[in-house]
Image (tube, rainbow, N blue to C red):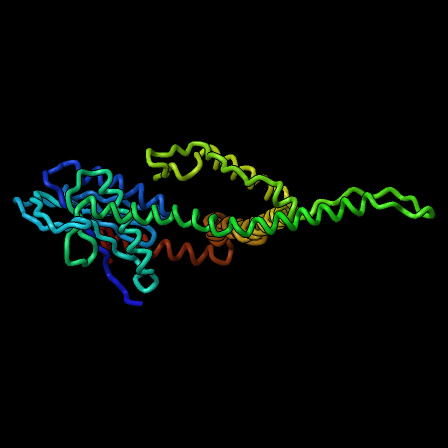
Length: 341
């Protein structure tokens, strides 16, 4: 499969439409959401450029204004005609994962985007991928109309082919019903007189008698003029979806497996909290040691003063202390020249 880096298309306008970029971006967002590609980011830093980031693609819309540019546009079943163009809107799809992107699906997505833009905007010409010629708006939209016509005629032809086969099926059902009626009306022997059971309905009878199911209208989906649903109209309203999700979650919570899982999760959470509390809480022995060390540091000055006073009052040091004090006093007097030897 050939990998394609980008898928490009361009729409030409005969006039300069300043609202083409904003209107086109809205149409592109609706088309992407309709086909399952939700837009995650919308960038509009440049007045002529809009970038859309999706799950699988990056979409770029660029509006250009240029002088009158005569363009040869091909119409269906006719020669090309010259169309003067004054502006254009380019659409570029870039896959986020080119190695895992299907080329045909990407081309179909680009075709549906261009079709929506051609229907909503006043478009004159359409350029498709790398096709060497330009199509007119009618020729481009005519391709989709022909495809829808063929799709509608195909089920009708299949029904016509299946109609001749319905007659033998009806005959078989009638034969089966006749056999049951003959068995029920046959005389029984005098020895056994049980009641004949009613004829059972065959699968063929049930299939023939059951009418086809009627399509149920979707709440909140409003069809457009041509009978097709677009954008958010393809989905149910948010209120209905929320109600369905609440019922689904309630059923999940009521299941035995969910209750057992929730109980185990609660027990694991309690065990984790107990471990964290044990790690963060200091043991009692360490607190006692800290308190004891603080008491020792606070009692040190008192012990030093008490030891000094005890040594001064000791009888062994009293004489030596007197000699030292006297010598100190004499040295002080001699230094001050109060006493001369």
